[in-house]
Amino acid sequence: MISLDRMDAAHVLDTEVRGHSIAYRMQGEGPPLVLLHGFLCDSRCWRTQLDGLSDRFKVIAWDAPGAGASSDPPETFTITDWASVLVSFLDALEIGPATVLGLSWGGMLAQEVYRLYPDRVERLVLADTYAGWKGSLPPDAVEKRVARCYRDAARPAAEVVDEWVPADFFADASPELVDEMARVFVDFHPPGFRLMAKSLAETDTTDLLPRIAVPTLLVWGERDVRSPLDIARAFERAIPRASLEVIQGLGHVSNMESPTMFNEAVRRFLLP
Image (cartoon, rainbow, N blue to C red; front, side, top):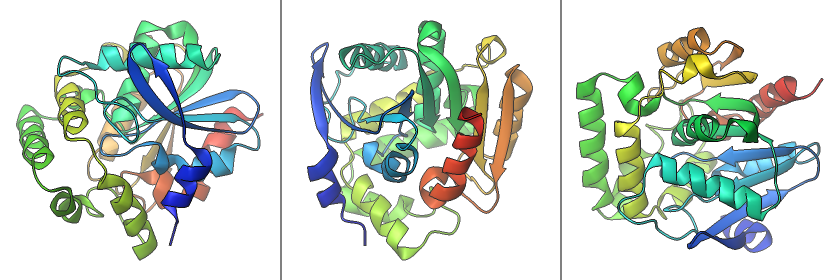
């Protein structure tokens, strides 16, 4: 079993940014690689990237406002606010242009960072993500997802974990992986859960995708049920310099389900 408590004690840092308390993990030296987690997760979900990629990169994984050990944002918070706070956070750490890697909701956030601050993004890695739910899913599917998230944000966390893990996140998870994700998930912040779901429902980045000018890697789990492969194919067609790597047999949180294959895909993209 993974000792997340031991990891927290060794690696969690924090800083104040624009009135927000931001927790983060940082490991390694080299070109900066910024990791943006999905909703219901936090920087602990990047454990195997912090360990596996820090030999060549300075790997920075934050807890977004409303997640992990970071403070909760106000109810008016939008994806634009998260992007602005992220760039201020990177300024505080003296991190300049970087590769930005976002998974699921974090991939949507990475797109918003590129839209607002294109000079801060050298390359993009978008994993199992969306052009917002609004931009990638039918309206009835968006309504169902939002209703589920709003309902579950008000329920006891342990009950919600049992319904989401592993079915929504993994295709073939080991008991150890299920336990690791459950221990992260159970700490979700109800306000952050609601606001991140709201931002996914209200965002449509389809008009941005053809304007992404930096090299972009798309990494997708072949068996992702939350962001199916047709969404990946749409990204591949729309982004001029995109390449797609499909990892067979994996689900939505592909970086945790097969860290070796995920990290190798990132390395092939970033290293000559």
